[in-house]
Length: 141
Image 1 (spheres, one colour):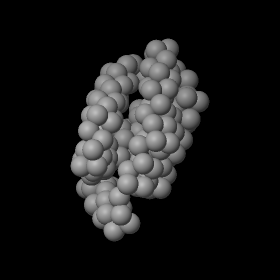
Image 2 (image 1 turned 30 degrees about the vertical axis):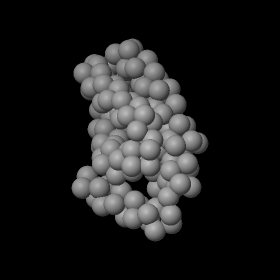
Image 3 (image 1 turned 45 degrees about the horizontal axis):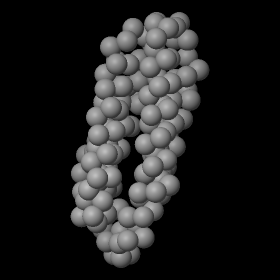
């Protein structure tokens, strides 16, 4: 959970940086959006292939399905940002709505679901999940 929380913080820093851009910063917006897409793709792969299945195994099927559902909207926001002209006034509006929804998702994971899963599992299983999550992350590193 500490590694995932660190990735959450890194993604929020990308949002911070993107939110300082203006309609004149089209190149910067394009580059930083690519960084955001990569970071979120790596993170989603880790959660969707390791952590969410572990939540299901632990009896948290509804929570895992809800988190997967949220990831679908992450992809939708990324699609919208990718297809929004980088010099558009709408760009920051989409980005801010995305951030609000993402922060809600992150709080649910960090404050409730991941600590509960960690507490429910024996230490050796938590270690196994961490190793498996890291392996998934290397696929897109």
